[in-house]
Length: 341
Image 1 (cartoon, helix red, strand yellow):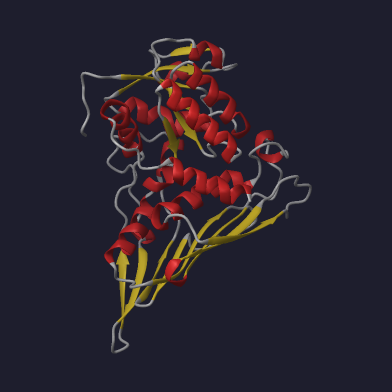
Image 2 (cartoon, rainbow, N blue to C red):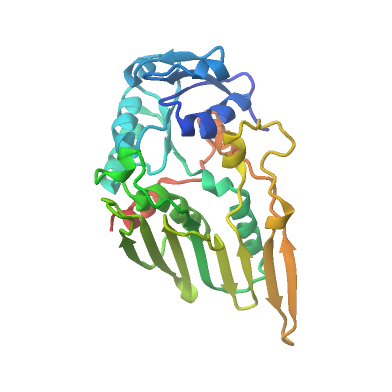
């Protein structure tokens, strides 16, 4: 890994719930360029069990006042991302912000201006670009085997028919609902592949008994060359559909949503385990192509090992060596424009 071992970046986490414990702390600990220095724990002090040398702060303000911390991970509830990002930038910290970055494009632009004024960088935690299943999809597209793409479907299916306990997701406040929860994942994957759409059409649904927020969405995005892309998410799918379905003039590719990192990390697997990020062979994608004579060929496409560590490497290189971070401000503004519309 291309890091400067003489420059270690002190990092702090604003929460140690599931996202902090699974998606951030293990990678900051594993990357030689970071020192996970502090975590905010308002009530239960659990981080020391996993990281004995950690400093546990009682509040966000305490962590932000730590002058040694250079990078702050904003992994608090969605409606607090703007507030906490602004506070961290005001304290001259770089920030890595979970999705959704903010509730509105206006808030995003304000934070961009603030970051520029204090000379700090904003990084967007769009980890699904580094999912093993999505990497497989990207490689198939780049191979050209499908020919000109005609239709692309990306889905994120769950079955949760009850109202969840997280108020910031289930109450009609800023950045709540399924569109703000899963929309940033799906839209970022689409935008990273195809850029900004020419036009789009969005449908929202409320289907669970008593829901106050959307629990279904579907968005059709139109691109040049007659390419149509559909992203869909639902909380009421008992039998999840294929996560990725691509049709081109020369064939089709079907791939389940199979990245295994979250499941493994929740189970306590370490990043150094040889099985980390490895999908079972039974989850390989199916590529079906047809030649000029009409002969079909089926090919199973295995995924490469998934890992979110390259995201943290990109953050490190951007801070230390001014290398461009792959998720751009324009990407996020396009995403927010579609979500807000």
